[in-house]
Amino acid sequence: MQLTLAPLQEWLEPAPQPFLKWAGGKSQLLPQMTPFLPKHFQNYHEPFLGGAALFWHLFDLRRRGEITFQDSYLSDANPELINCYLQVRDDVANLITELAQLRNNHCPETYYRVRDLEVKRLTPLQRATRFIYLNKTCYNGLYRVNRDGKFNVPMGRYHNPRIFDEEQLRQNSQALQSAHIECRDFRTVLERAQPGDFVYFDPPYAPLSPTSNFTSYTAGEFGVAAQRELAEVFRQLDRRGCYVMLSNSWCDFTLALYRDFHCVELKATRAINSQPSGRGKISELLVCNY
Image (cartoon, rainbow, N blue to C red; front, side, top):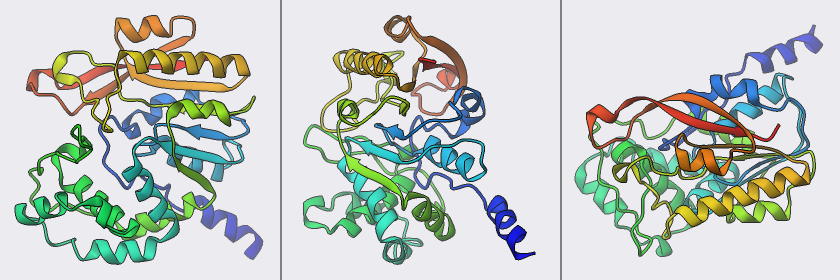
């Protein structure tokens, strides 16, 4: 009887969920994306990690036996984001203790005091605590820095934000135990992706209008040149024999960049827009080379 109960218990465990709010996160699009995922591949690479919604989903699908792959290589150019994932993976108990001290302390004075902390003077654990607190209390979970690399998003209008979920963080930590996590530029995926690997790109989107351009994700910006370089990396991976998938905005510019590949129109709910009339369902691009 014990031999059959353990697999059943694993089957019933809830899937890990993103522990960060992330503008453009893919949680809502997973039902539309899942039919386009390869079923069997060697390793998984995600060079624009963000909230990692697809990684958590793939982890759950593998646990259920619906997809098979070996290792995961998770990276991003944002050092604070990567440090946060490393602390969740390697020191989740102490991270939970630190976050608990901020759980019921949501006010403008606390928010701007934490936002203005000098990151270079903090320990990795303190940096991760700060990152999660600001993520859950800033405006729309937006991550934006100025030219000096300082986080400058104003406080959000939340009465009682949930800073963290202890059980969820422990599930995230467990899922990340075998993942390789590094702060890397997206171009470096070419150094390690091998034939038969699956690479998913979720870059800062090409803007649909001047008011929708939120590219100040790191101290630099992800502009037209970077979008073109990304398309070239996509093509190189395709020639190498990798499975490659990419998300971006549905517009003439991106459609032209990826016209040689399978382009799918997805429908997402837009949450960030300066004009209420611009919110609602919007087309997004999903590109596959297979």
